[in-house]
Amino acid sequence: MVLKNKLGIDNEVELAKEEERITKKKALELFERKLLNSFETGTFKGLLQIHKFLFEDVYEFAGKIRKENISKSNFRFASSVYLEEALEKIDKMPQSNFDEIIEKYIEMNIAHLFREGNGRSTRIWLDSILKKEINMVIDWSKVDKEDYLLAMERSPIKDTEIKYLLKEALTDKVDDREVYMKGIDASYNYEGYRLYSIEDLKNKS
Image (cartoon, rainbow, N blue to C red; front, side):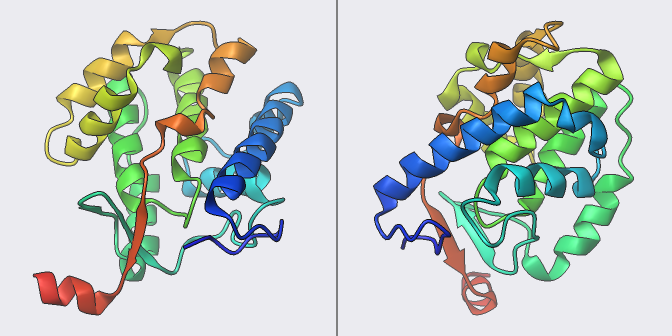
């Protein structure tokens, strides 16, 4: 299924390529114009601002909380019915040190606010918190893709793996453009979103 988009593209591969090209350009603009400094840090509103800026030229839903229920691989993200309640709780989570920040990041990943573009937006959101609170960011080139995806899948149950992986990749190059742009790399995303209904959830429970 090809997502409805502003570009009029009906081919999934073509859409993915064009989406990545546009969002990388927007991410660079976000960095060079220092627009993140004007966004909220560590709140879901701040994440909405990031997503809207990155994807507003591609999707109508840019910067809007999803109304669909979605899953990736065998992992179901938070139900849309309880999403706003979950986001309010995430906003109240502390973020004064590395462990607290990663725990907040994990919860935001479980929430998965958007129909598409969660990984890229949330990694920029994470780095903005790390930069503000501990003056560090993640050098994503040092994070193995497969290890990261597996650790994120397991993180709701056990977060030691993802904390270790990300801590090992910390850098004080908080204003380095190359380090920043690694976070927008779409190759870190899961493949294969699947929409599901409340009825699906009931039938499998």
